[in-house]
Amino acid sequence: MDETIRRALVEASSSSTRYRAEKPIEAALIPETIYRGAHFARIYADEFNDIWRDLAVAVAVENLGFAVKNYTILGIMKEGQLRRVQQALFAPEFDPSDRRRFLSGLENELTFIRKGRGGNLPVRVICDLYAGDRVQARRYAFVIVPPRPTWLMCKVGKEKLLKLRALHPVYVDEVYFAVPFDPEENREQYDWTLLQRWFESPNAPEVLIGEEFWDKIGGAGAYRALIEAIEESGMHSRGRIHREYYDVVAATGDLH
Image (cartoon, rainbow, N blue to C red; front, side):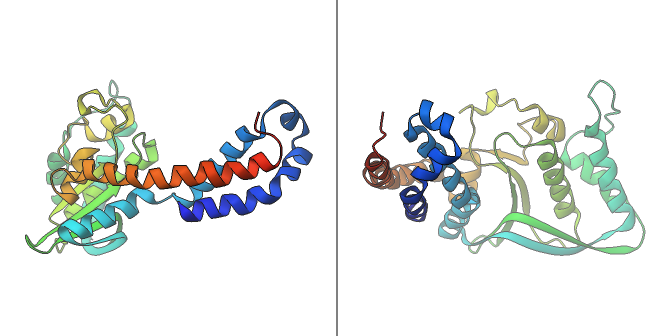
């Protein structure tokens, strides 16, 4: 947040004239504070692009002992197994009323995939978060997506889960598709259709939503502790934004 505020202050000190020159109609009709707010949001989005993964690393390191983001896992799969991964991924491409649902659930899909034969092929999978529990000697891999993942995010995430579970040698003990927060605040109400198509149901055991994800990597109560810590930091950052960033806007003479 300090870096976000620093960038915003640098740009705000020189952009008021440019705003009026480039957007004369908007500048005449819309208070500059609205423009400033949108501009700050864009800077924030740049700086915080990977925030959920960064936070997940910090939480997992504190609780489990080891964690890293964007971790590459290498292994071997048979040629026929890779073909079957694509077959399993092909089914959700169709509308539920049209497709042949010969597979139901990740474990059944894996049973189907592992029956594939053929020569060995190298496979490379990048997981968003890899964590290791040094006490329990357990290894975890996570695909982390926003609460409204796109069709492609769901498909790529499902493919990674299938491959990570089918890889030889076995590199991870547990693999999950994780949504860092639940916009519905209740898993039973989470009804994002795309995720349901790829994982049968948001109640699929390989899908962790909100508090379930954070408590998995951080222990019971981790999510609530994380939110409280962010709120505490927010008291500092919100104060700085009001005092410093909008003071620059006030100096331009347009706070109406």
